[in-house]
Each structure stands twice: as C-alpha cells, then as structure tokens.
Image (cartoon, rainbow, N blue to C red; front, side, top):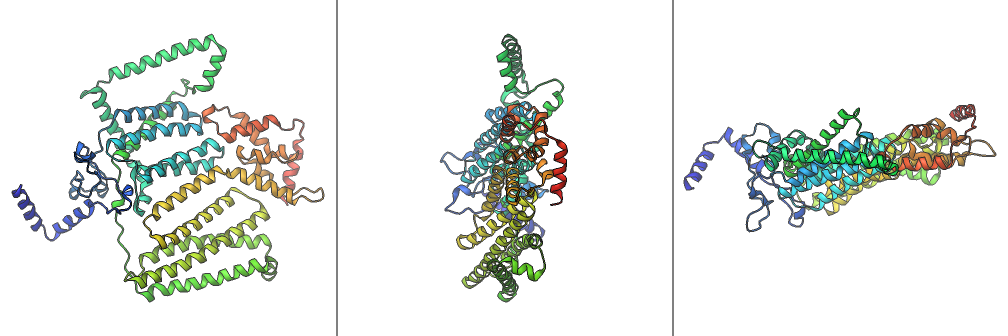
Length: 576
C-alpha cells in the first residue's frame, strides 16, 4: 500500500506542465459541491458506482459524503458530459420493471384517444418506477424532490380539466421539466436550467439498463423469459374469452365494458404498439435518471471580473434616474387623468395603451438582463461594496415594479377598448411573472440567493399551473361578454367579436351561454358541432368538455335560428 502511494506521488510529480492541467481538471470535476450545513436535504445527490457500497457502509454513513468514491476515472473521459454522470446506475429492482411495464400498458390503452385524465394515470406508475429506482440507488426523498414531483403531477391535472390545447401544451412541457428536476435534484443555476434537459440523455441508456435488469431478474444469463411471457399470455386469453362471454350474456355489462375498456381495435394496432414502446422507454428513462442522475450542479460558471465602484455604479445610477423620471410621468398620468395626456399627445385611448405595453414588457426583460450582468461584475471587496450593490440594484428593482404595474394597466386599457384575446392574456401573465421574479431577486438581496434558482423555476411552474386552472379561454369569453353588456345602450347592440368567440374551445361555453339569442347560437354553433363530432371515452374527455356538453344538452341551440342573421351580426360587429 505504501509502494502504491509512492508510485502515485511519483506519477503526480512527473506530470507537471500539460499533466498538471489534467490533474487540476480531475480534482475540479470529481470534487463534490459543498452543501450548507443547515440544509442537508438539498445536497447534490451522490454519484453511484452501481455496487452495494453506494448505499452506505455498515456504520450507517451517508452515501452523499464528500469522500465517496465516484466510481469512474474522470480524467480519462474524452467527452465532458461523461464527467457529470455516474458510470452505471444501481441494479434495477423488480418493482421498477413492473411499474415501467404498467406505464407502457396504460400508454397503449389510454393515450390513443387524446389527452385528459389519461395522461395523469400514465404518469403515476412512471413516477413510481423512478421512485423505486432512486431507492435502490440509495437516494432519499428530499424536500425539493417532493416539491418538483408533486408539482409535475399537479400540472398534469390541467389536461384533465381544460379542453383548450394551448394551456395543456404549456402544462405538459412544464410538467416534464419539473419531473426532470425531481430526478436530478439541481439546486444551482446550472442545475435548474440544464436539469430539464438531462432526462432525454437516458432515452437510449434507460431501455438497455432495463433489459439487462429484466434478464438478470427473470431470465438468467440467457434471457429465458418464457415463464413470465406465458403467464401474461394466459392471463390475456382468459380476460378476453370470459369478458366476451359475459358481455354477450348481459347488455348492461357489455355497455359497462364498452365505457370502461379502451379501444383496442386491430386497425389501431400499430399505433397502440408505438404508444406501448413510448411508455416503456419513457418510464425506463425516468427510472435510469433517478438511479444515475446527471450532476449539472458540478458545471461551474466562472465569476465575472470585478469592476471598480465608479465603473460599475455610474451606468446603473444613470439608468435608475431614467427609470425614476419615467415613473414620475406615469404617476402624473395616473393622478392627473388620461384626458389631459391624450389631449396633449393627440392619441386615442386605445392608441396610448397599445403604444406602451410592448415597450414596457421589453424594458422589464432587459432590466433582468442588466441585473444579471451587474451581479457578475459587482465589486466584492467588503461591506461597503455589498451595501452599494444592494442599494443600487434594490432601487432599480423597485422602479422596475412600477414599470410592470404601468404595463399591466396599459394592457387593461387596451382590453377595455378592443376586448380580451389569448395573446393579450398570455403576455399579461408573462409580465406579472417577471414582476414576481424581480420581487424574488429583491428578497435574495436581503436573505441570500442560495434558494433563488429553485424559487424562480418553482414560480414559473406555479404560474403555468395557475394559468391552466383559471381557464384562459373561459376568462377571454367572460370578459368579452361583460364588455358586450357594458357597451350595449338604448337597445343597440354592444361590441362583441363573434368570429373570435367562435374559435374558442369548449371551456368558453359557460360564459358564451349567457348571451341572448340569436348571438348565443351564433357564437356556440362551431363549438357544439365539434363536440357532437367527437366521441371520446371518459379517460380522454376533459371536465371542460363534459361541462360544455351538459350545458348544450340543457339549452340546445335554436333549431329555427336564421343563420343569415348570424352572418349579418358578424359583419356588423366587425366594423364596430
């Protein structure tokens, strides 16, 4: 053992020059990031070598200790990405394999008819597969892991509740990102930003890992899976034969099976097979990531070069003065009224609102970018420098919040003039979230920025969830119906965009149902036609779609409605 140390020392002394760079890279990449003593549950998960030692020794030592052997020669890796991932995950457990199989089967049976509650039903066994794989690798359930996991599943309730496709798309993408963060456990900016990407690196390695585990668990070295396959085949035959007999014996039972069982027709066989493969691969990729996560937290961003106080503070102070002047004008407009401003500028009410919103949104985005670079180049010599940074950037953040409020107010003015649309409600939501990010940055300046990356990502996920739950299509329809009633005077029709209302989803039916005939039937006719055309099973039908059907059944569209009157109304509203 002593000879080995001497040889190692000699090799180290003989590697000066070019070898020193390799040795420095080895130390930098294999060193585990420091973890705060008061937050052990947020430590970066250890890398596991795949053997029993990765689960802790007999004394109960934590596998996340700094002296853990990472299990792979980092310096010899030619690809930098390999330096961030474990050499091999922990052995796969039978529970992981069964959960992955359940995910594939449910995907095959449920996902062929659209996305609604079925997506959540498929995600649950996939999450269990990842949980079992993490347990086998010695990874405990940490606080933020639970936050990301529960948040991802909560986001998948949006497709089950809303019929509109665009909030569903946002929710599903954000759920994948949150689930990936739960698997990786990132806590730094690099971990949070790259974490949603790391899940896709296991798409190829996950199935190979699962197949190897399947052979070891059930088939031995030769992969003899005969008993398992025969058991599954016999069970399928029994269910098919006796289910068909019971369905033929009782019509009520046949209707029950028809409502509960998914469509498994022969014509859809190839597509069902694709869904089965996608479900299996997705579940195994998630489980493999949980067993051997990519350590994105180990990617270190070099700090920016420290600037002098004058060089750093002068541009920001000038910007703060400009913000203060603009906000003073906004306060004068607010208290002095818009009529005076419009009279001086010669603009209409809507033109004044439309002119300012997009510029103020861009100002908010650029301000966040300025804050990022300012923090990289901030002076860091002592307490006076820290005070200077907090005062200057804190003042800039406060003034930016006033800009956010002004932008939201301008969009509200624009909506009063022209009505609410999907684009307008979306950009207002983005502006409000940017304001929340600025508040979080201000809080980080007071209590420290250790939690800031995860808080920003969590706020984004919470915003997408809230956006889907409030039903944006329903809000658009409700606001426009209210605007129609407010603009109706002395028996004259108010302002209402019939063409835009006809393009909304079934989520808008409760609000559009409040309109009077013939406008109600004109607005609901394409939605009702689309609902009548679709015949989805219960697991692929959203709550918004089901509620719209109930409303239209209780109050059908006017059968004797003159659709030429609808065309007249559409043309009339178009020029108002």
